Image (cartoon, rainbow, N blue to C red; front, side, top):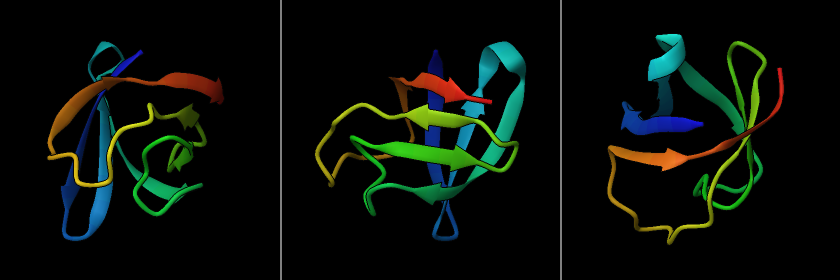
Length: 68
């Protein structure tokens, strides 16, 4: 699914347009968020694409929903 990732006040936020959902990332497998699993406030677990740590945000990427 396509998600838009941004950072606000040191917190990563994800927006899913098709679900009209904007929620915070509560935990991530890797500190830079890329190439691992992230857990959202609503309980979803997404697998993020593997991108360089210095990737500029906001950015729309293809993430895979694992749980939730």
